[in-house]
Image (cartoon, rainbow, N blue to C red; front, top):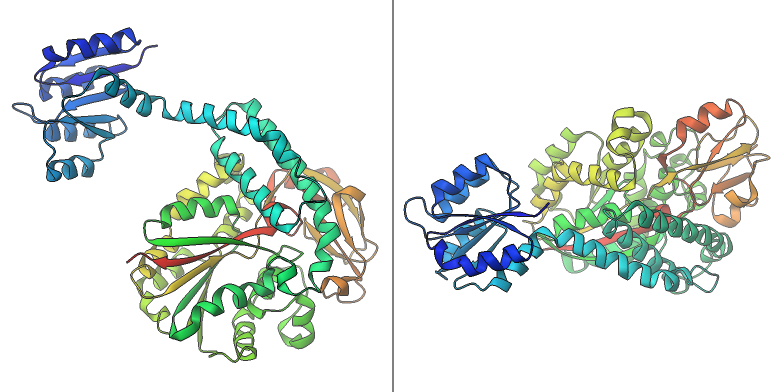
Length: 515
């Protein structure tokens, strides 16, 4: 079906050659000579785009535009004007026109505008698909043992950007990309299995930034010369989610995004405590046994983050007058946004925002949320919609008016768990789906990293437990008892604790207010 264009201009007879040109290109044109007729036609027929003369007798272009937008808010409108006055352009742009053109216009100019507005998504998708397929082999060739930790960050960034750019492409192409992502995670799991332990004994120059390094590397240097810093940790945020947040925040901040690797297991009790303590979990338990306990309830194991942070600051001979907040409910975030000035007076304020993690768990527990987000792109969209209306965005907006540096990161990401693997162990083994500690732990060999000497991985265990297993790729652990029940219950849920790119390779952004 031909695209239908409404063209309103009081000198429409002088545009016959333009109309014939567009009709020869396959477009259907309905010409009218005034704003009243344009509004009437909008209510009678379906149009794909409107060309609107700004200077018409009677109802002028801006008045017509307002009525068109009241009737059809999503209909693209292109304003055409003889005037180049800035105030007129600002009025038109402020009314959210799709584009504007200055008279005289030529037919090709009109054609390009139509194609840009109506075919932009299709053209972009086709170009992205061509570029992705052209680079497919080169990217896949990097999934090997020669790729170092920096290379894996670049691979993950590329795959994530392709995933977001191609989310409207045909199902066949998306399946090709999903298969390539899975192959990359398979190779990444082998890489972590071979290299991770060696990072724990190296200076930071020879390895990636890890969870215990984050504050010392990215936050403390920003506090020099009396500068104020607000550190915001968004629990369970993946890189693709950050890209959506970043797009919104660039209006308020200049942003530099880097990456770090979460420690294993990529779970809140380990990774977040490690960030705030500046220590690996085994070091926390050794130095501060009263602040470390092992149990099944993840959230109950993160009750001492503020104490760990103050001890960390003291070890680095820094002022330990830190303001710390943990936001679990939306109303808590709103209270902080309303009194943001209280958080810009101390050298360091730390805010933990738990909602993204809550959304991940809610998707596992709620059929409604799972139906709203049946796949990764839909889950991303759901997260973006939440952020746009959240108290977290309000906090960012308020901080953008203050003389502070804002550092944003996360403790771990999450992976869409699609493949189950049977796990065997004693009855006291941990119940987590992507990692377990206990005795005599066994699972499918290729599905997990086996840690028989937790000390070498800087991980604590309480006897009789003596080992860990960490799930790779998109596997999740299911015990043989009631196997099919739990297999179906947890398949296609977002989980964390394992060794995948989505869980381990994480953004950390330094943001300076534009104001």
